[in-house]
Length: 493
Image (tube, rainbow, N blue to C red; front, side, top):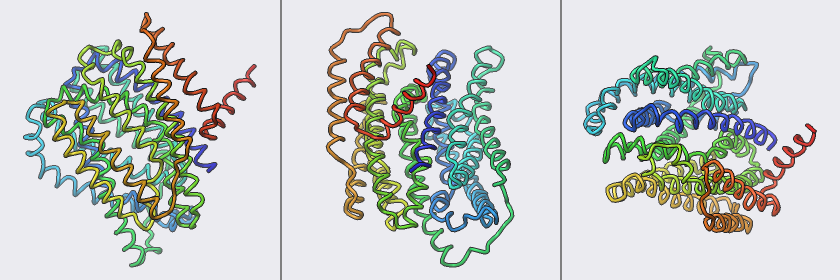
């Protein structure tokens, strides 16, 4: 648990530093320099390349986390595991190239209302390659118990490189066409940086070593990789499908509006991303050692801590929506309910804790594929029903409905198979505190100037919700962090 706490704290710091840079880039600069269509094409390129990169991993990321403990031996360069990982990535990328040319005409026809995307579609090839290599190197680095470097590069480094590029456009030194290349090249920069870090740690050894490989191990790795592929691909499709379907039903301009509002709603999920960088590795190791008590403890603590933090951040966003839209061009206000529905969906996912990792690294790992397939089918069906009627708000509502359904289903499965039930009365207490906080703040008038209203409402969320969470000791981890921060602050004076 010490490793989880240390790396989660570091990752959270890096993530929120990245959020600050990302906020300046996407919320302050992008809307004033780029059109909604230009933001939309960047979103569509990112969505499709992410799906293709996940396809090209062939699911070996899941097998890496599960089976790497068998290869772990620094003196023997982990028995050539990195060579195996990158060789399979090369195979996956070759398959992607064939898939790209097979689907190219269909992609162009599907996005007939997105001329910018059609013009830049060829960039999916390098963008997919960069993302694939980063995914592969990052999962390798994480199983070496270093989840923070990849987070630092992905969350902060990537955004800094993009900020430099958009600044050059702002200074009218380059046009949008150049910025698209820069935007995609930024992914290549952080991939090279991660490779350099592994070389520096003397963990980048590509010498083949098949001494541990036998038929039984190959069968187990192939089986897990296959189901991890289905699970991982469907998981990413779930995240990206809304933007893709909006691009199909509506226009790339509306994709841009949706993406901009998603940027705010995603803030709710950021602390969970830090936890998920390291906790799955610990759960996989715990299963290997049959340490079910450790798994249960991680499960319970992850649900209450994430629920409290998620509701805190969602409250801070929702009570300040009027202020948020004062810094954006008027057309983006059409996505106000995107913030609410996606924010709620993220809170529900956080409240589910690490149930997906528990299923994924247990003997029932195949069930995650079934859960995600059902999730993907549900979100597609709800998008088909809701986007034509409600536009981008319908896509966000579809996400909330599908997330709630699969989270409840997965919780029930973990309870039935492992007897783990992480929810207590304090979970209900957190929800009641959040509702009470929102009710009180909603009764207040709006103040001018906007920054005063922002400070006042945010301060009330901290006072009413934050102090209550600390006072009732909802999460010992949160209390420990607050106490440690207080002690450091006192030591400065």
